[in-house]
Amino acid sequence: MRIASAGLILAMVMAPAFAATPKVTLDQGALAGVRTDGIDIFRGIPFAGDTGGNQRWRPPTPAPHWEGVRDASKFGTICPQSSLQDGKPAEWTTHFQMSEDCLNLNIYTPALTPAGKLPVMVWIHGGSAITGAGSIYDGSRLAHHGVVVVTINYRLGLLGRFAHPALSAEQPGALLGNYGLMDVLASLEWVRHNIARFGGDPGNVTLFGQSSGSVAVTALMASPLSKGLFEKAIGESGVPAQLDYPRYLSRDLPGTPSLESDGAAMAKKLLSDDKDVTPAELRGLSWQTLLKYQGTLPPGALIPVIDGKILPEATERLYAEGKQLPIPLMIGTVNWEQSLYAAFKLPPALIYRTAPKTVVDEYYPDLQGEALVQQWLADVGFNAPVRWIADANARQEHPTWVYQFTHLSPAAVKAGQPGAAHSDDTLYLFQRLDRANLDFNTPAEREMRELMLGYWTRFARSGNPNGPGLPSWPRWAASGKGATQILDVPAHPVEALMGQHMKLHLDRYAEMMKAGSGH
Image 1 (cartoon, rainbow, N blue to C red):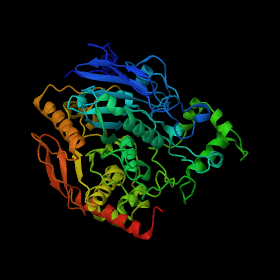
Image 2: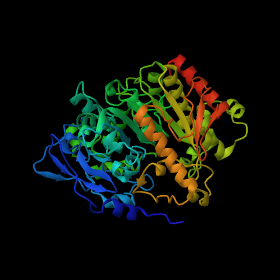
Image 3: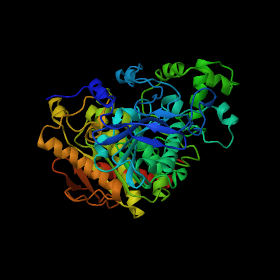
Image 4: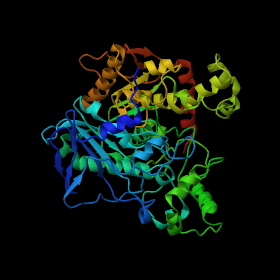
């Protein structure tokens, strides 16, 4: 089987236009993109200002203007980052420039006319909020199904989630800490004002993302600052699990320092033991120095913190209290989220901090050792919070749809995967520049691709993934009685998937809610 390399795919998407150059004029200035295989593509459009220098660790500023026609055939800069594995830049990043002036987006549209009024899908990439870029996801495949696709960059790592008492004192009343989420909000504002010029309907925007991108989607769906910015949401393998792991901007908890305390520890290490570190000194650190320091920290995704404004309280609590946006939600996981933990040897004692061994043994009787720890972490980090949020959304009578992606590509079968790994589902929606892509040279693979594209774009169009030629997908019913759509060939619903595991965790969440845990 032939699998295209990341370099080959990059060369394909960076190739010259094959037809007349598409042009769009915005208030910022004029753009010239490229047309490839019937899709008009505009790359590297700034949606906010430079976040470097004195603008570091501040809310995003308005997008810049330019004179003449801006070349939108090439990708813009990507946000500073290093690999999760070894702290060095990933190989794919060498194809891009890296800079703190990185808040730009890419647009893929099949109908470049304001009369198009096509559904809009805004993609937030994953990567633990530490690595990745919207630029590595080619949205042409989705655009061929009649939607306008927008992929965005947002600040990552310590540049995207950071606080220090000096920065907080400098900006009283400002949004603080969750800078990556602020960037997503700024991109949605830009889309609202500009997407009609690209054939999109600004009143029909679906925010979707995977892993830390899905964390951002579900967090912003619960944020009071998101009102009017998107009408539907899709979360793939990620929600802010804040009942089990609450983190605050400035409030320390036993064993869990606040983001400000983390920032003070960094300043002490990199600058001075003196507590009177200034904002100018913090902003004077190079981003390379910040990345090097970040590499010394324990591994893990950078979940947004409870800051009192973007996130007034724990996300699960906001959903349970009915404070999320009243919109349709499609949300799910893959059946081997454990792939994230397979490379680590984690002791079973790790899970007994959350539940007594007797309880774990009762609800997980057939698992032990590393398999038990991996399943527990997948349930606590992915499966259970997804269903908690789905239940809460359904109880408010907002249309809700839950899935589990289980399909194994020929490459996954050859690799001996026990299930669909974290992010395998994205390969059926996008061509990716950072991974080997799949061939669709078998009927089953083509059917799986069209199934995913059909469900995702149908949901973006109407808030319901069902449509002609697609297997029926039942709407989610709350309280653990919902049917999960298994995304495989053929797709089919399953009632009460992971029943006893989910009962344990959903009951735990209910008890924490009563006790006020997470406040």
